[in-house]
Length: 308
Image 1 (cartoon, rainbow, N blue to C red):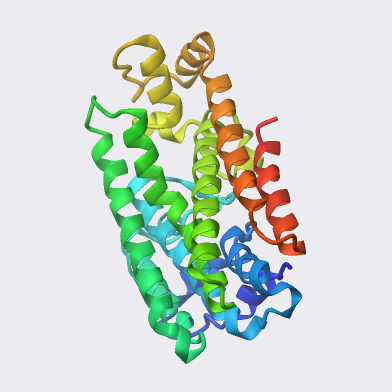
Image 2: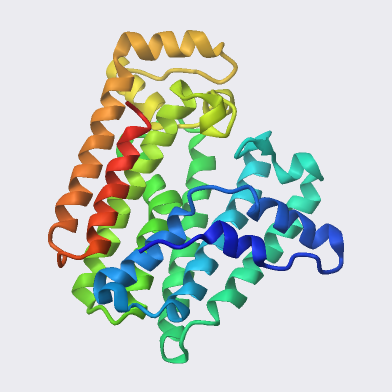
């Protein structure tokens, strides 16, 4: 089961006043994208109820998750001093930082307004799951920023950070869809764990593509994490292999990549992505054999195609 979320989001009305508050929201949501998170919410529901899933029950949660995700991107881009998002100037570049912050705040409110459309008997638990997810993302973002000034960050620290910052949103999307569709606690937990594995694989892949990706398809400037001194899977793996701290901030991108190549960091990252993807697929095979399960397996496998 899939849904054209780009069309649905494009149909939302952001022409309200004041224009400078709402126009950037429409701009951010119209940039396209794979819409992985709302699709996962629908697929979580379809895994439970097959093609009998009631779209109207799940759609508000799916849209809320996507609007929330895009809210975090507005603020992340300000904090990361990013210039480009999905091939277009970031909101704080197109307008200014204050606009990006305030429009992002309004997007958060819009996400909660959208979530309130789930069936009344499901709302309390959906709010609990949503709030738990949102808190995790904020905690992960703070850890990410804290790590920039620490020299003792380990790969285990990194995995916990990306579990919070990236993976819990994918995991909650699957779990919330399943919950709305009537899944028991065991199936909800299995889907949540699948989302964690997929999310960790996705973030390691993002770190890899920040070094070795194509800017046109990646949608962001290559080398941004290196310029900002981010503690990525690539850097922390290089430090582990080299046996000491490596300062990359301010270093020429080609020099850092030459070091990574000499240590075979890319190969380690690819292996980690394959491992997390395999773990997700193994758990998917524990679920009922439905079209939704097969779609999830295909989505997990597609992650690996970007790094071939």
